[in-house]
Image: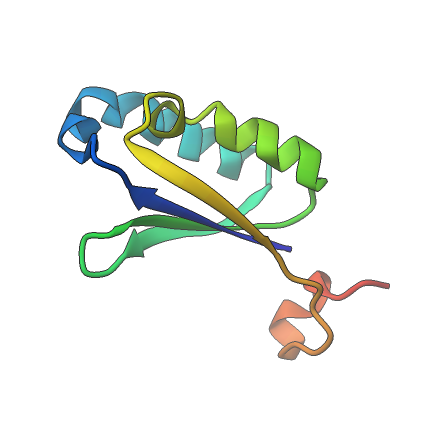
Length: 96
């Protein structure tokens, strides 16, 4: 499981120019069943993604395809988490 932090860079003011492509990127992540949750970092710091079911290399490639990342609107940090315990509703996240 991964947490992707997308923190605004000095090019934050260009976000509206790439928002449509960024939203398509998010949609693809959900369609591919890789993204579990996407949301904003508060207060107005950028965004975050919780991802699962893809290798780190594949996720890095996916993140680099985000127009916000490609155009330096945000900087991306990928944190890998190896879940050990979870609520039963999230049991699918635990290694078998």
